[in-house]
Amino acid sequence: MSRRRLVKYAGVGATLAAASPLIGSGAAFANDDDDRKGDKQGGGDSGSRAWRAGDHHIHSEYSGNFDTSVNPPKFSKGADAVYPIVTNAIMAKNFGLTWAMCTDHGGPTHSKVNLEQAYPDLLLSRKLVPEVLQFWGMEFDAPALDHHTLMIPRHDDEAKLLFELESRFAKNDPFPADPTRDTEAKMVEFLKYARGLEQRPLVIAHHAARSAPGLGVYGQDTPREFRNGNNAAPEIYVGFEGAPGHQAGPLNGGARGGYGNYPTHGGFDQMTARVGGLWDSLLGEGRRWWITATSDSHVHWTRGGSDFWPGEYSKTYVHARQGYADIMDGLRNGRIFVTTGDLVTGLDLTASGQGRNASVSETITLNRRNRTDVEIEIKFRPLEGKNANGDRPQVRRVDLITGQITGPNSNLDADTNPTTKVVARFGPRDWRKQGRDYVIRHTLRNVETDMYARVRGTNTDEAEPLADGLESPWDDLWFYSNPVFVQVR
Figure (cartoon, rainbow, N blue to C red):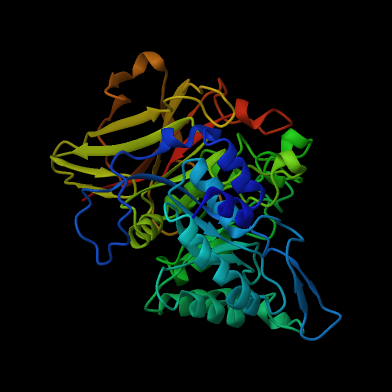
């Protein structure tokens, strides 16, 4: 495919990419052992796994509008988001992503639009940009809740499966509208149905507290609904966006994430950013509940929107082989860390004790009759080169956060874990260089109860991420790991 033909098809995004291949220094983010020979179904060893950056919340021109004055409603492209699917894929590649997902808005009879119009464009985009694994799915109109990622496994009938799920369960798909589709019971029904499928999808909540009017006061998404959904399908409903999209809002005078009621903290949703908050409450029950970071790209901020391109600012790294199945397995099982502004390009968290060890999302089991010290190793890789803003971000501090696992909470509305705390803070004097990485080691003495550990880091001097205002998002960067778990038996 010639550059001219690619530009003609893709529009402005491809024009930018073709004219300036160094935008975002995407080459700096590529993995040395990147394997693009296709999907590797059926597991196998994890030797070729590496941290692979992606984005599961991206909009295309198929986030349009519907004229409901006619029956069936008439769909028009480009009303809410404006870029072709392939433009997003090209820009994702340009900013260092190896996987991405198109997640367009639903609406009345949108399931048919997805099947007949959008999906053929996705297939073409996969051919035009084979370096980026492009998942099929949507921004699901979750019954009784705000939007969610609905990620479909890559298989021959992926389009039919999405059509079935959207037409059967999305609250906005019926025409005329059906109020019975917008209930929590319908959401639970959907998750239970999805759990029984041979090709099981993934469901991840978007901008979970964007509708929240205050700290610890929730809007469309509530702790109770997360618990009920996770109980219904724990391997389907696996987490929420820790860092929502629309992070470029302040560059045009708006709020980061579009959080116009209660703000984000360091670009992260209050459910994630507050130590001992809702995320820690869920982890403290032993739930495998993960966080991600996305662009929610609709319109780039340079064209009046509030968005960065996929991968330009936020990245979700998954430890996986470069194949659809293993990327999805990594998301499902929490082999994830997230970062903004390319503050780091690698982050490993390991817990060791009694000759055993576990990495992010895994569990180490200790015998209480022996010494139960837990050695924590944090290894992070800073960006080599400049980020998409032309900066060389520097990690100023890394925090180790732990919390106890006390089992299911009888209060489904609980949103705190009082045992969670920052147990250690590390600065540049506390880490040592090891090849291209920096390594931190810390010992947790006499661990007597089940617990988890997680890590965050920043380029700021804020002890805790402050509520966001109109500061440039490039000056306020954070990374977060998902947790590693410790059992004491």
